[in-house]
Length: 301
Image (cartoon, rainbow, N blue to C red; front, top):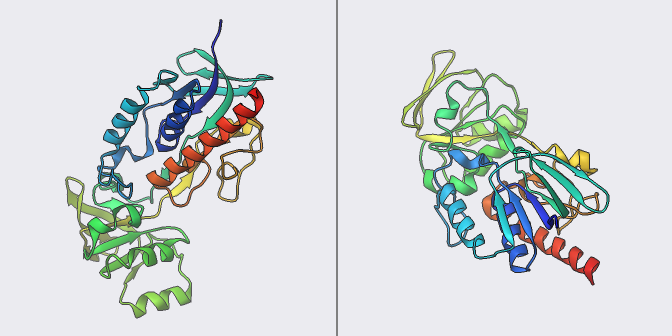
């Protein structure tokens, strides 16, 4: 007889892994699809997750898979999902390897895609000395001379966020004019220079930033910094499944991950952009798993 899974989880990040653990412990048959291309692959350490502070992402993933292996009803498939649709009474998923899976519920935990500012060589430093979240990496950068690189209207907010960790800051908008007069005044009052010309080069070795060079020839010695990525959702399944989007562009979901499409749940960064932290995503996966199990139980009772 063909297996109909209780839940198919699309996404093997912290939200998907957390949901698989909770559902496995609830004795649910779960298949988790992991494409093996996590957003935080460039990150050397993740912080702010109690008992796992400073753990490399690949090690977090390895431990998670090891723990999930204790539960025989959980299966991990190392492939992406090509298509997911409502097949009437259940959902049908087609994996990239061509295999077809059927499930009673779907959890979308596909995360985010980030586009970094258009600065030459920025990827060489990202995850080593340039980061996006001060709550994740501010402690390691405390009191260092830092650059804030942002081309968006969130530039001033990012400076404010980083300020408690270091007062030695410059803001580089890379040719964009994103500050109001009042924001400029506040930055000037705190001695934070603003560079609105484009960045010609980031200089350093081994991912360690040493200097920022601007098009007008100005240079600033910096030991690292923070950037404002533009976030987008890679999820193409939510529209096909009939899910509404929220004001952030993510999948609209309630506190237990229920979306506007019956039987479809969402968790982690796929449903909530702010803040994009591992522990927040994992918590979202846990809540969604409880919602999924409750719905399955109600249908079975």
